Each structure stands twice: as C-alpha cells, then as structure tokens.
Amino acid sequence: MKHLNAWLFTLVAPLTLAQAPQDFSAVQVVPHQIAEGLYYLEGSGGNIGVSVGEDGVFLIDDQYAPLTEKIIAAVKSITDEPIRFVFNTHHHGDHTGGNQNMGNAGVIIIAHENVRTNLSNAFNGGDLTKALTAEQSAGLPVITFADNIDLHLNGHDMHAQHLAPAHTDGDSIVVFKDANIIHTGDVFRTTSYPRADAAANGKFFGIVAAYETLLAISDDNTVFLPGHGVLSKRSDVQAQLTMFNTISSRVKTAKDAGQTLEQIQAAKPSAEFDAAWSAGNTNAGSDLVAVIFNELNAE
Ligand SMILES: [Zn+2]
Image (tube, rainbow, N blue to C red; front, side):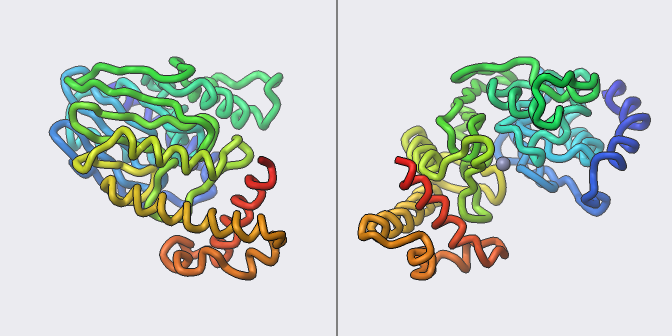
C-alpha cells in the first residue's frame, strides 16, 4: 500500500486532469458488505466487487481513473492488505478506467482475451499497428483466458466464465461458488434496458442467452451483483428476462406480419416497461426495438 499511496501523489492528479472531462470530485466511493470478506464499492461507473483476506485484495473492475485514489481509500477502510489483482468484466471505460493506475502500481490485471484486444484498440485510437505508450500498456490485462479461469484466493473458489457476445464480446461473470454470489458485469443491470454494444459485437439475443445462463447456474439464495444497480435475486433476473421475451416476441410477431421498423416502433411494443427502464432516455424503448428488429433481420 505504501507504494500505491506514494505513487498516487505524483501521478493520479495530472492523469485526472488530462483524461477526464467529467468531474469526479464530488463522487464518493462507498463500501457495502455482501458476505464475510466480500464487498462491493459503489462510486461512479460499474459496481466494484471486492474480496479481502490474507491473500490480498481482489477487485472486480476499477471504475474511472480519477477515482483510483478514492477506491484505494475505500479498500483501506476495509483492510490493510494490498490490492493484488483486478479482474475486468469487460473493456468499457466505466469498468476499466482505473487499469493504468492499478497496472502502474503493480496490480495484476486479469480479463478475457477480447478485453485485452478491445482495450488495445481503445488505447491506440483504433489502430492496432500503432504502438501503445508505456502508460497505456500498463492498463492492459497481463493474464488473459479464452473461456474461463478459476481463482483461489482468500478462502474462496472463484470461477470467471466468458459468455457468448452479449453486452460486448468480452463479457465475463465471476461466480463466488461457496458464497453463492455472482458479479455479472454489465450483462445484467437493474438501472436500464439491456445495452448491446454493437461496436464490440454485443447482441441483445446474447444478453437473453446470458440471463438464461445466470438462471441455470443460480438458486433462490444467489446474490447477484449487477454491473450497474442494486444487489438482486434470481427472481429479479427472471423478471427482466420475461420482459425481454415479451418485447422481442411482439417485435418478431409484427415483423413476421410484414411491418417495418418504423411501424413497429410507432406501436410501442415496450410501452408498459418504458417508464421503469428508460433511465431518462425518451428513445430507450424505440432504440431497444430497433436493436431487436435489426438482429432478427440479420438472422
Ligand atoms: Zn459496459
């Protein structure tokens, strides 16, 4: 921890100014306990999973670069053990923004191989032939896997499982088997309609399949830690899946009857769900309908 704190004084502030148009000064990073030795941190960006114990601190995602210092302080309020590992559930900046800070401080970053590819792409402006700077490369995962990886830390057996393209093509969920807790990354969220990042091969129907996987590997006592939102139960996952299937089957029925996307959007097949799931975006329902329509079209 000494190393991290000394380094933070010299580097985090300038990095913050250079990289963050968003103002993070008012953000508080708040720890919540889920079970013995297991927590999540709420701040700005994706929920951070935290395992603490004698093997050191294992984090799942690291939010935004300007929050690294607050994340470290929040961890320090739980334990004196150093942060040793960060696992990235996918490449999006609200989950990996702290990677360079963490990597520079000697933290081992672990992710699916597509996360490393997508981050490389992001760091070099989409040109894979362009070399990364030393700062940028410190944010890349150093341990990657193709399908799944098991971690055995702090008395927990953790199983990280890559999913078929859903939110992105690099999504992993992390299952704490003995504690019956699943960090879902952004494949499951409680704050808005599902988001399939088409630029990273995300697919609405992949998200549907991911929910089916979540249901298949869980029971009524499983605690779901979503990428965004609040701790949830299996019944919450099931309720969202029912909503997705309701909306997509309406879109399919109308499409099979020959309606155009514009006609289907005008009929508002997501109407009764829009108030609860649009997250302030008045086009969220019709955007979701377009994603579903276009995926059905591509079949
Ligand atoms: Zn995301």
